[in-house]
Image (cartoon, rainbow, N blue to C red; front, side):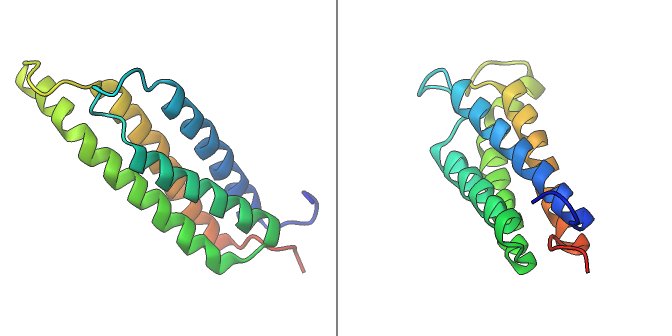
Length: 130
């Protein structure tokens, strides 16, 4: 399965692994319902992205990679929306809204890397070498 693949396959595999590990950590580090940085919508979007990425890896449909990138972008957007409040607290030096700004920024970076890797894999191809 790993032999004679194009470069995009390995980039896609890396994005899937990082996304899966990031999703598991995102769920595990969710300490309470009061933390505004965590959202079930983000979990669903990233889970759909990882599942779609796994489908691309197994089946080799490169056009499906656009769907993967869209799911990562949607998850990232929802996460950034949830992180704005805690970031404004850090910026203003108050604890008005609450939430964990560090975790929000960290996971935004992780999911941004996954989105960029999935976009790159779209251009490199994920099928077998000819």
